[in-house]
Each structure stands twice: as C-alpha cells, then as structure tokens.
Length: 303
Image 1 (tube, helix red, strand yellow):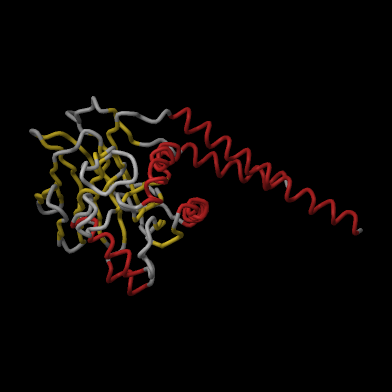
Image 2 (cartoon, rainbow, N blue to C red):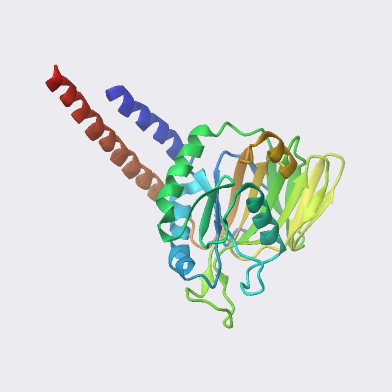
C-alpha cells in the first residue's frame, strides 16, 4: 500500500513541477524574443456559444480552471459560425468541422472535447472532462522536439517556427476577456474568455490554410513566420496533430504535442497552483488508503 501511495505522490509531483504556465503580464511587449518548446499539454476544447444559457453559467469557471492547471492543459473556446454568435468565424468553423469528422452528435452546447475526442456535454460535464485529462496525461508520450520564439517586430508580434516533419501545426490565436457586443443575444457576462479568433493550419508539405486572416505568414526554405496584431490579453496555442487524412488512415486523431504562451492582466500565482495540486494529491492518496485498507481488513477477517 505504501508503495502505491508513494507512486501516486511521485507521479503527481512531476505534474506540479511541469505545471508552470508561460504567462506574461500585459506590460510585456516582447521586444526581446521569448523562446519555448513544444510540450505535452492536454488540449481541452469547449464548443460554446454566447447565446447558450448553460454556457453562460459554466464559462466563467473555465478561467479559474485554466489558471489552476498551469500548462497541464490548454482550454479553447470555439464558437459556432452560425450568424447569431458574434464570436463565430472562419477559424472556429474549420475547427468545428474537424471535430465533426471524428465525433458524432456534436449539436449540444456546451460540449467538451479532450485531445479531439468528445467527452461530455452540459453543465455537469466537468467531472468526466477532468478524468479524461488525467487519462490523456498518462497516455501522452513526450512530443517531438520543436522550438518556437515570439518577438515584437515593428508593430506586430512575430511567431518564428519550422514546418512539421509530419502531421500539421494548428496555430490558434485566442482573445481573453473579449467584450460581447451589446446587441448580441447574451444571457451571461459582458465578456468571454479564451475565444478562438484566428487559426493557421500548416502542413508538412508546406501547404498553409488561413482562418480569418488576422494572422499572416512569410516563409523561407526551412522556416516560417506568423505575423499578427495581438489583443491586450491573448494566448497563442500551437497544436501538433495528425492531418485529417493521417488520422482517418490510422484511427488516431489525438495531438502529438501542445504548447501555449499567454499575455494576461492577471498572471496566475505559481504558489496557488502548487497548493492546489498538493491538495489534490493528498485527497487522492487518502482515497487510495481508505479503499485499500478495508480491502485488506476484509481479507484478514476471511482468513
């Protein structure tokens, strides 16, 4: 029993050590280049809508969830391009089309996908989503080695990267605390967080598909630059994943690796993240002890 609990502690301590998010405050201009590598974060996508009553209750919680998990997860709010939701766009349309190729019955909002797989829907979905996150963390292998850098060039931010050796890079631009237009059908708060506002899809064969064209690209023989004017609070999420053709061929559509870099008004306190995970670890270890101890006692009594 002691070995089991120790194993749980060691595994979870590894999660704590790797949970430090790449978050910069809004005073950061990125005049100096910031370099970062592809990570093994779990991708959580919420199919949401400004007009959705349940989403209006749930969406404010996602900001806190994202801050507590550090870079263990990356949460993206994907809005329908339905002519009603003001945040729907060509990028979210492309992302939803990918979801629908690999999953059935995705009409309900909110619906959560973890690493591309539909997990649950509705207000009570988060418990199943949390279980799926832990499951994917245990399955996820170390990602291939890819390096990226972000720097201000003239008035724009420039993301420097290379083309993928296999699969695709889905480079997503998110806006935090995005104002909802006053004339929108909106039962919730006046802002929404982690809204997908643009995406560029980059193939190994150098094919590039733009989303809303807020981001533009220039590239050389081996390198690629993505240029964009960033909102005050934003995230760039880079997802290395199979192309649709590759995923349909081998049946695996989960990302190979995910990394997020953000600029936020409120930077999460690393101590809060650590305390949160110590609490989760302690709770989990106690649960294991309670479950194993009666099992052992019952065995002793039967003897």
